[in-house]
Image (cartoon, rainbow, N blue to C red; front, side, top):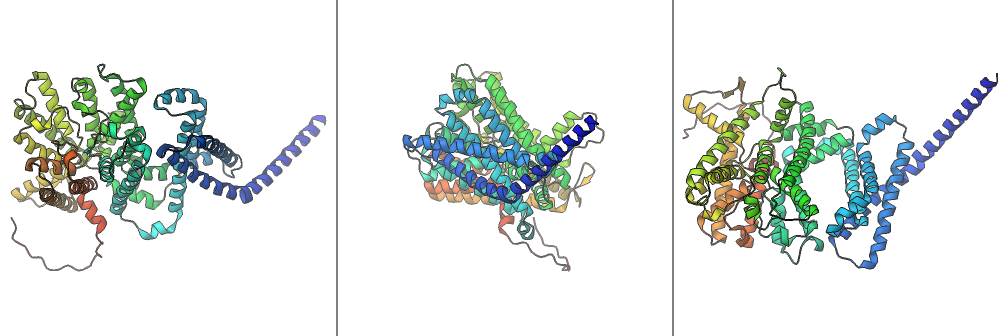
Length: 605
């Protein structure tokens, strides 16, 4: 009986606590949570404003304590708000965790920052960054993610997005334009540059970084501070992956769920057949890119030339920068003479890793996804290489071999003269790979003969593969066009590859892409002839390099006039987003009609 009375007493206490917890939760959800969310959004914008002030502008030292107090207040509020939200949630904890991954990531990063604060401060002291600044970086970056998560969630629930039915081409082109605008603003901050840098040069650098080209009118290692270089690195990363890839990833996976319109847009952007496959590939694109760049940075760190002495933090930074730049096919380097510096030109191990990263970035994300799937399941009899992957492998191997043989034999007595046989083989392979939109160079291109220069035009014009970090007309476009010509010669009406019939729309798109690309290149060369006084071959090389987002130059880029810089900026943007995609985004869709006029054949060819 005594035990029963104790049990009843404990049950009453438990029921009382449950009732109190329910009342407190009701009070929190109805009154405190709406107010807290308003403060949360306000503090999010405030943290971004403090980040811009602290890292973009010079201000009196007397304001530093106030900035520090603001940082601590923001961190404390954030942790307290998220803790209360977790305690008083009306969902099951597993469901809550699935729907609020991004908040947990933020809390985890802040927790790690608190635990390893001393270690982080000691590493960042070499860059004159204090512990308060470190806290600010963590908080503001995470607040950016949180605010974006809420905005993405809002637009996903809003019917406005459903009713507008945005064209994926408009979203793709608009995202690049938005990133360029933000990059120009950030690089204009006083702390981003060393001395005065002209707006046209900042615009040129921003577009070149976002379009992962690598052309630059100035030396980014000396003209930009660490802050400016980090902005450029972020532009390269976002430009290589594509803003829509990143935003869709956060929208679908970090907010817990995605709407049908989100998935359909991703499906169209990735040119996939099913929505489920598009979501999976999108997730793999983001994760495998970060993994490849991390592994590449580690390998570059351990293969860094011993003769090029740098402090440990700078060596780590250089390795990360060049890994991202190589995988994104950007061609930007922190070295004054690029990889043509003696210490790096003689380091085959370092350059070999750069070549592997360039090739992986240029294959295309869906192809890399299939390679990873094949490696993980080598005996899976259901696995089938897509037609796109087969065409990419074939054309990539052909172009690399063609470029290697051409450079080896045509340049042996010119830019490769004086080098031993193994060095000529290695640098011929490196040039063949880097000409396909990467832009790194280990030799003086002004010494290159005209025959190899014309072959370079072809390699740069073709560029990388679709849905990759590179530009150009793409390998599959050239392959489809060649097969179409073969069909026309043989009188075959349908194009068939690997027991699959290629859609007529694909063939038409390939032909249109080639014609439009030549129109852009010829028009840009003609305009440069009106604004520049450089040799004709250098002008042609500059335009084709910009269109293919390659970044190689025969020394013309720093000497361009302002009109020439603007023209090259336009060519880089068109080359990255694709001229056909740009025209589709700017054009109005015609209504489908049910009738058809009688056919008439026009004499062509």
